[in-house]
Length: 190
Image (cartoon, rainbow, N blue to C red; front, side, top):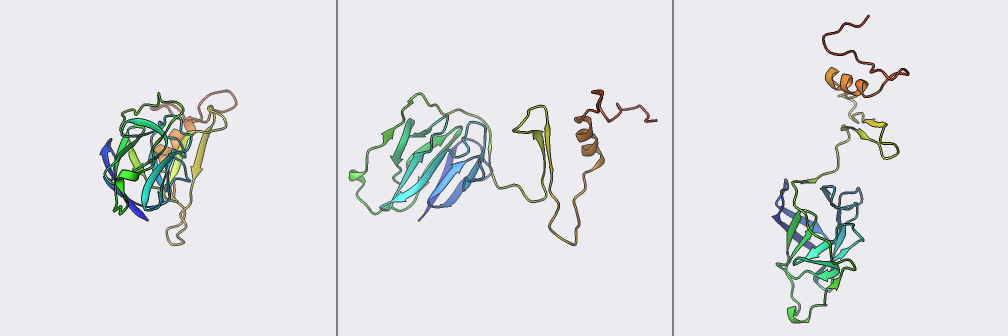
């Protein structure tokens, strides 16, 4: 089954998203719809179909999933219903031919204090193979994880760092004395 999610709250790069169900929403690699925001869990919630009805299930997210403003563990999403994760609010659109008066009751979240926060974010696509990522590694915040992906194209060859980026990376890697390997601007190396 396919459903459309229309963004009605929050900033994203795409306002309407078509999803093949079931779909996990979150910021992790396992998510079919990846949302780049720190208030979104890696596996935040799952949207799925049950007897022609779209349902949402919170997957133990830290900040919760809200349907019509209420924190839920699981809830039906009849056409036109709004649900929120972090700073985003979606309206679900699809055709439902069942009885709207016989919908299952939402299962409330154990922690009803989950709140939607407001922030700017983008719906992100997986990073292209030639992306360089620099930032604190998960294993040690003092280390820097530097991932240089080489283009798979035989014609273009490896991607090269430009000199400014190479200098910035080198300045984050001190030598044994604790000094930066890159001299300060306007000084000459000997």
